[in-house]
Amino acid sequence: MTHSAILGGDTARLVLRPLAIEDAPRIQQIFPHWEIVRHLHNRIPWPYPPDGAENFLRGHALPAIERGDEWHWGLRLNSAPDEIIGAISLVRAEANNRGFWLGLDYHGQGLMSEAADWANDYWFNVLGFDVLRVSKSAANTASRKISQRQGMRLIGQELRHYVGGPAASEIWELTAAEWRGR
Image 1 (spheres, rainbow, N blue to C red):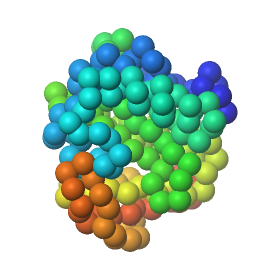
Image 2 (image 1 turned 180 degrees about the horizontal axis):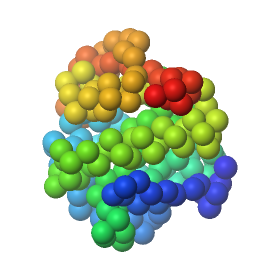
Image 3 (image 1 turned 30 degrees about the vertical axis):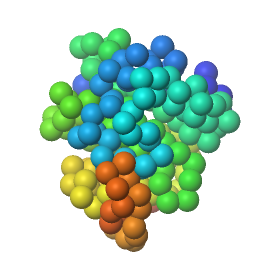
């Protein structure tokens, strides 16, 4: 799948568009906050450099999209479709297929649950994968609640390294049949 072939979509309140280099300034503005990054994988540089978003897009996300290994979308409110408020990604990997972040002003509104439901549909129904696994910091209770509401099962625990340091990590799993049978 090529970058131009990635489909976008809508939820009740969100527009999901594939990330583009033009998104870097807005991501740079709203992403580098401790409350957002502390539970993310430690490959994210901290403190976040002034060109961190552009480097991520040019050096990682856009090439991975072109290879067909990853799919990255910017989240935008239907009421403001030109302004990114967060992002969600799907990744072809063994134990961590979905990741996301949301700007601080948008936490606690159920927006990421909508985006995660949309991404699960994409993973199973567009990309055709049979199993979705997500890894998360055990301390990230908001992310855990999304997995629980989606019917995921906790299948493992391990130590992982996050921006906030080493921490207990949980691996959650959902099959296509379970997702479709909800």
